[in-house]
Image 1: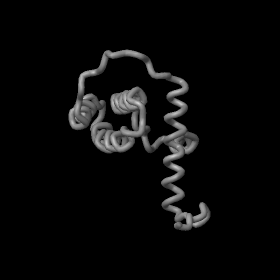
Image 2 (image 1 turned 90 degrees about the horizontal axis):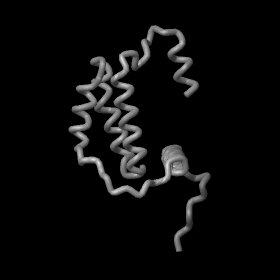
Image 3 (image 1 turned 180 degrees about the horizontal axis):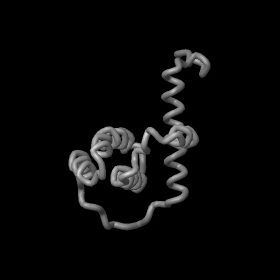
Image 4 (image 1 turned 90 degrees about the vertical axis):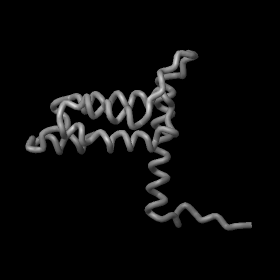
Length: 120
């Protein structure tokens, strides 16, 4: 019989991973509560992650936005298997909205931009 390590013996990295997993689970549960699954057989056509990235880059309003697409898509892809499809589509739409916005990311010379980022 193996002895289990008490929760207090976890490394900071393990605690961080557990915290991120718990946050992801709460996010998914909240989404599913707000948006129950619909019984519909109409599916979107398949698209690859590379095609999605190419289209989002093309839609970007600025070169800075286009340069962010790869990292945003990569981050979304990493968590895709853990999220409902509709939540994944919602996040893709948010990426599209952000990179198509000519004012995103905020101008770093703005005195309010850092304060706003900390409140989110």
